[in-house]
Length: 615
Image 1 (cartoon, rainbow, N blue to C red):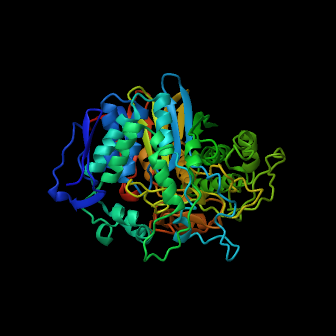
Image 2: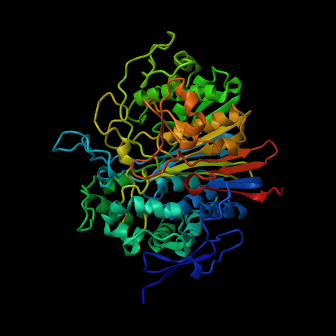
Image 3: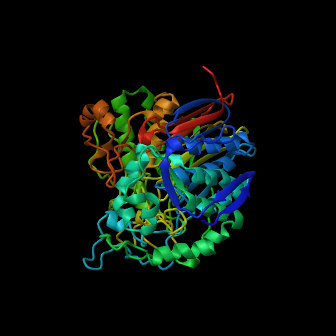
């Protein structure tokens, strides 16, 4: 008989056996759970909920229920956010987990202070500048599964340090208590839906390259079937270990040693055709890692204060700059096509400046104050032709001489290798505290490498660096550096009070998803659920506008008259045609909360409130 360990966490007895992961017919498993807790089905998704007392919105109903149950039991927004994120590590393992990183934005209702945590992964100290150059050709490896499925792409994970920092700074739960619901969820399992199965199939070749990954995600050689229940006992054991011993075991102890071994000496299957070069992650990298509490970015927009993430995220500055450009135009008085033309052109201008100036501020001089100034925005806005799309790519602005009207500077535009996965959550508690949190392991499936016996995937975040080293590139590879990100957890205040929190996954399309949702709502007057659900397009200073098919059908002909070229969206590793998978909570003046998730994208999301308003 397999050995069994029992651990009591926050009045929940967690029994962890020796099995790693199983899939069983959901119809033969009885559901159980505490009041308001686990119900077991992934089809119980409600994209909009209205009420009082607290709200949670995620892409997944189990994770949303975990967060809401924490709020019901008296936890605050930070407690619920960490518990929810841990649950997403169970149900969304291809998008997030303790093998990755992220950015955490917090509003403290008592003090009115907005703070952020930078939990971005770091490059190992031994990582060379030519890590992604093929020595046989002298050129970058093609951005294919072969490139991202490797130890080379693994950065020092920051998610656990983020959780610990957030709980220490603003939470009331211990880490062990926050992990308890997700531990139970990992043991009980969740019902596999079509999204989970398809994501597994999309990564089957990569997962099959590693025995540990294949054992967990490809039982009996195939992706889990829709309707079966997927359990991850190894992850439950890992969460239990973290609850007992704290994050030191991850950053200094046995888990650290196991991660380093997995990266430096990848265990691959004999029959894989994928080359899996070893990486550079070392024990010192893990021991030295620190999640950083830092000031947010802030932009004023039509009477609102819009808060976001500072570098190494480009989310706050690029959203803020684009808003500042758009503020010089009357978007509310335009037709739909005129508005969308201005949105796309402002995005291109802001992305040009992102590419030229944004990187880890600990390594490069980021002119953040200038990029977020109204004066610089005015010098960029005068380049926006209301009647025609500019040829792309447009040049970046000159941050040193922008008083001259419509000044530009020739800056080389570099390829953006940031992938489109990730996940996002939004939480508001009864006291008015808010958390907006975007977390990731980079592309769907991360590096493809499960730490053997631990139940979680390692990230491939280092592919967010520019693949070719250039001393003038702010996103060049450097030891200890954090790669540029587009994660954009965003909080909107009016007269010092929060009115909206939102964020999205989607790589560099995060920025445009947040920007389009904000302008849909604030300028075009769409209710927040409609603003979030509306078809999307993204212009990131490229020749073509990438757009969802519904967007092309509705607006393509009109925008083509302006000179825009629209092409359907899609992921190089999957067949997904969706842009982003956002979550949001709107906060009314009387405390009425409108929690919103995607109605369709990524299978639909789950928005919950503590005390629903009955219609």
